[in-house]
Image 1 (spheres, protein in one colour):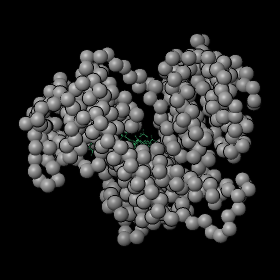
Image 2 (spheres, helix red, strand yellow):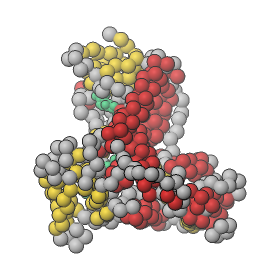
Image 3 (cartoon, helix red, strand yellow):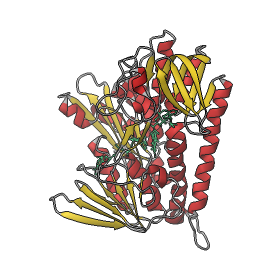
Image 4 (cartoon, helix red, strand yellow):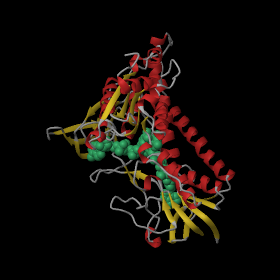
Length: 468
Ligand code: FAD
Ligand code: NAD
């Protein structure tokens, strides 16, 4: 039987990054993945394929809606070829997943393909697709088994008409009417993809606003812009039934006043969150406990109740984000090596890759109000930037929240072109506990979208934005 210093179950961004860091720190490392490709949800059916389709559909949308204003005339029809887009998406995925295989080989990490399950706290059985099994011994194990789409108790996901994000990333036709249940990240990103390709898109959201965990100003701005792009929103609607026929779906919901309303479409995307995935792990054989939300319980060292077993990523508490899982992978590897790493969960940024993009870090205004923090706010509209006017991307703003007395930046909230990249400046500033004035005094290249960050900081400092 092969023995390892550390075995990692699951090869998503949590697992494969943990494996690399363990190997870098000199540990004999194995990684176990039940699917044939490495990379987990993120690379196979999550971050990467969704961004590939967002990019392709964005190009198409620009071609049919914005090229003319830029003086580009196209003779003849512009057509979107969905099959080609999906094929391209798949080749992007394949390049990325084979990149992870290369990284495993480079770092001398042993890869096992098969379902990993505990025999006891130090032995794992790997059931391969050909029915054979193999067991390994591991001094320490990191569980990184991720998450799966959740649904509502009364919804049957037939994966043909009533689908999850996984099927939505590989549709064979553009829906005529896509009904999205859940106005969170997945619903809006994939809703926008199909809206751009010509689908009618209706988003039914239970809460009173879309992306309800983000700052309310971002919900408002994004909903306004997406509405202009033709997406229909039904907030404060409670879905009560979903019925699928061969070619049609009917969704019933209670509207804001409690009256029943009916939606008919050809596809229904259920995007109401994801649930931690622990099936098949045989956690009880190792004695590992889960909480009432199905998450593996961990302490501040990401250690489970069994001292040599750790857990990271979507399968534990916290934001279900690839970069959060990666930080935790590095964290556990360094804990195992006897180091004292640290993660500031308040500074894990969140991004929605619609266009305009939405990005945020730190506290929202709602959280600061609830905590009774005395704060001030500075805001700058993207439309006032030369860069935005040059590109035509004028929607959105940057908002900086800072402590009223100390001026320390407490939260940064952005909507606009390329804010997914701009948010890094805010994360760096907050990691170094910058004040709004610190950001305001830094030179920002002109013309860039980043100037909105400086201007919002000037506004937060003492209402002295230069260009508004
Ligand atoms: P996962 O990536 O889920 O990987 C877990 C792996 O474990 C899987 O490969 C699974 O097959 C394997 N596994 C499970 N059980 C076993 C077992 N018993 N034995 C062997 N292997 C097992 N996050 C972002 O930060 N940015 C984005 O843009 C983004 N976009 C997304 C878009 C979509 C459509 C979706 C669905 C998610 C998106 N996410 C995004 C979320 C992101 O994908 C997850 O947060 C991230 O993948 C979690 O990483 P993980 O390593 O914890 O688990
Ligand atoms: P989410 O939590 O972002 O959004 C779910 C939405 O569904 C929420 O707005 C919620 O209020 C709503 N909802 C819940 N129950 C409902 C009901 N009964 N009826 C109507 N609406 C209901 O979840 P998601 O969009 O499914 O994404 C899952 C996870 O994947 C998220 O945690 C997210 O972090 C991650 N993800 C991240 C990205 C990114 O970083 N860009 C992209 C996609 C997914």
